[in-house]
Each structure stands twice: as C-alpha cells, then as structure tokens.
View 1 (tube, helix red, strand yellow):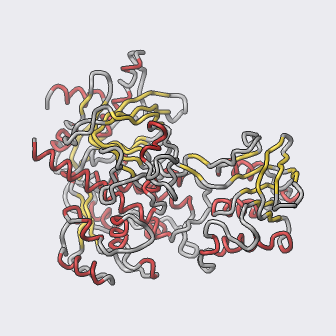
View 2 (view 1 turned 180 degrees about the vertical axis):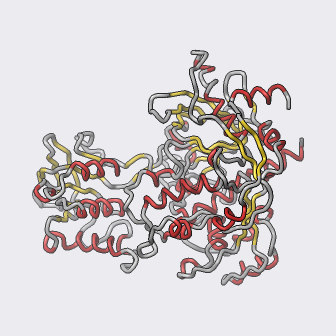
View 3 (view 1 turned 90 degrees about the vertical axis):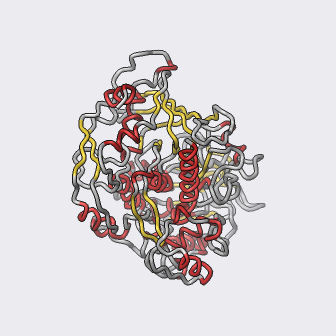
Length: 572
C-alpha cells in the first residue's frame, strides 16, 4: 500500500478491515437469490463526525468533509459493523485497496469520482445497485407472450443483459412510456403486467464486485427521496408490487413486517420504509450521503472522448444530524446523474397573498392542520379550502374528511368533467378516488360538510383568513373565510443548482422542465442529455413518473457508464 493510500485510510479512521464468512443462506432466502463466497466487512467511526475545520479558507473548507466521502468509497461493497448479512462478496481485503485507489484526493480538498448521483429516490437506489456490481441475466428458459421478444430472448438465454444490444431487444415493444429501454426492462421484470398477470421475472440477478464502479449518491433526506415526505397513509396509485426494486421482493418484505395490501396497493409509509430497508439490505449504505444540499453542478472541462476525465464539479453543503453542523463540500466527477425527481417545488397559483401563513402547498402544511385540530371539535371549525382537481388535491380532501373537517373544494374544470385522470381509474381498485370524484360532482347536495366549487379560481388571498374566488361568468364573487388553504395544483423539479435552472436541457429549451410536457431531452438508449455529454437524467426528469418504468432508464445509464469504464480500462 502506497503512502497516499495509507493517509486516506488513516484520515477516515478505518478501525478494522477483515474478511469474514457470513450466513449467506439466510440472506439468500431473504432476497430470493443464491449467493456464494465470502463477504468484506469494515468497521468505521461515526459517519457524521467531521470534527473542526482546521483551515478557515473556503477553498479548503471541505478538508474534513472529504473524510466521509473517502470513507464511503473505501467501503465499496461493504456493510457497517454489526451487520451479519451482506450481498456483495469480496474475495480478500486487497480488493478494498484496489477500489479505494480510484479515489483521488486533491490538494485543495476536493474529491474526484467516476460517478456522482444527485438525488436518492428509487431510481438512484437502483442505479447504485447496478454500479455496485449487480448484473441481470436472462433466465435459462425464457418465455414471453410477445412473439418477437420471445424469439430474441430464446437466442440469448442465460446471457447477461449488460452485454446485449438494448436497441435490438426493445424494438417492437409498446406500452405506457416512450422510453424504449424502460419498456424492455418492464417486459422482462413483469411480463404481461398490464394484463393483470403475475408471471415470474425473466431475469436472474448476481453480484460481481469486480465490476463495481465507485460512486456516491447525494440526497437531502433518507434514501427513498420524496416518498419520505408524503402523507404516510396515502395509498399508491400503482400496485404495491410495482413499487419494488430488483432482488428484494416488496411483497415478501410486507409480509415479514406484518403489513397488508389493500386492493393490492401499499401506503406511502410502507414504500418509504421499504426503500430505506433496501439500501441497508443490499449493502448500499456506504454509497448514500444524506443531509446534502447541492448548490451547483457545473462543467469544468470541455466534453472529451476520455470519459475518465473529471468534467463536472458538484458543490453544496452538508447539514449534520443535529441540524447545526453545516460543512461545504466540492466533488468532481467524470459523470453526473440527475435523479432529483419532480416534487421538490410545489406549483403556485401566482396570485396576491399566496405567501400568507394560512396558505400551504405541501403535505407538511396539511399534516400541521390535522395535528392542530382538536378531535371532536373539528366540525365546528371554518372549512379548509382545497384548490386543484388532480390526485394530490383528492388526497388532501380525503385526509381532511377523515379528520372530520369541513372542506371546500375549488377546481377549474366544469361540473361533470374530471381533472387529471381521476375518472380513468377503475373503481374497484381506487374506490376512494371515485368517491372524491362523486363528491366533486354532487358535493353541495349529498355530502354534509363538503362544498364543491367547479369552474372556480382564486383571485387573491386576504388577511384574516379570507379568500376571494371567481366562478363562471356572470356569477358573483365569493369572499370565503377559511381555516386554511391547501393548494394542490402540481409540483416541479428544483434544478436551481444547474445553470439557468437546467432549462437548456429541456426538450423545448424556451420553457421550464416539466416531466409531463417538457422533460429533459435525452439520447433514448443511454439517457445521456443531448445538450451536455456526461450528464444523465433518470426517473421523472426523463419522463418516467412511475417507479415501474423508471428502472429501464436506470439500466440504460448503467450500461452506458459501464461500457465507457471498460473501454477506458482497455486503453490504459
């Protein structure tokens, strides 16, 4: 081990490095796959203890912070001490040094890595799994109802998916996304899912730690992203099984934790807990850094054919668990993947008074209303005004009605016309949304404590909790006193860390990025942005708002990065 490597190990307080045999059979049963071999294990100090900055110079302010990032990379494929189960095997401790040698610590206190992922939702979690060496392999006897795909799979039976021509495999596939690799992976993971079938996956999974690519996943909160911020009792739109990530069955996890599906749908709280558990169970903890707020992602070198060159610089700050430690950091990377989702910022009405304290746009604001309302007295309170005609507005109505609060629901669409697809959902699977839809049409007559205001819009919010609303033409204005207002008209991604808010990356650069109407313009088979080589986007930013379809985009990114890494290693 050279002196530089020794210094990194010393700086991060690497206490113990050992190779130990784990109870592989127990873990195999839990994740549903067969594993053999030994597992690397590392013991390390408190993950968020940075100490004091020895140098007040802003250029070197990240010196102590780099210890965390160095530690995370040295801990490739390893679990925290005390864990008895790990998925990624390492033949011996030499592998740790080899992986850690790819981490270069600059004199100015910054760090360079092959890949940085901004955002830590389900797409980022799956990408971390693939970059950690997990690989899908087509089963030995594949069978698919699509005759064209079935023929192709039989030709490639038993072969790794990373080594295949994804464009060839995805040709002829159709579905509820425009991303070809998303359609392909969904067809392999959940054959004929849209027909109600629950056929087994056509992919086997195995871990090859020698193919792991050092990376870090930066997120503001716990792994799982915005799922941790949703109202916990809210049910998923997708079937519960469609929320799972490969290798670890969501249904099995639900059963082990004595949780139940309702109409095959899970709660947001269960989904968030599953994603947090997934990161730990798959030994990805050391890849994830929580409490990080990225403030800028900028290119520092022109695009080059050498994909190992650190072309990007990521700046931000880290907030400790006590919410007081605030350390700035700078990381350089050859590749940056945007996985921030689309719920960072609530869309606002843009009317006077929207900044008043009784007007809210988030789930946290709604939860505060529910907590502050005494039980048994809620019906005596002024009504809560809900604005919007989509799913998030319907969720707010359901939560308020469950608490017994009177509700006024204002939305732009005329009577009898549903907003944002509420009427398109099958009533047998989504009875609560059909109930809200019925209330929107008949609320003034049939539902006590609920008033429906179709074809209405807010003119302004006034002091003393008064709202001025305008209805259809020739109807009088309404001045309504309310307990609070819940504005639910959609959300947008926060890309303020990119130049001009990332607008240059959009399909239509003159408009802001919108996952539904104006997603990031991407190369369809790699998800690399058309405007910036080396910058990728996955999940809602790529137009895939559902977890089920976002996984294919992740596969496209991982295959591209792995291919470039192998090409550069051959050159050297």
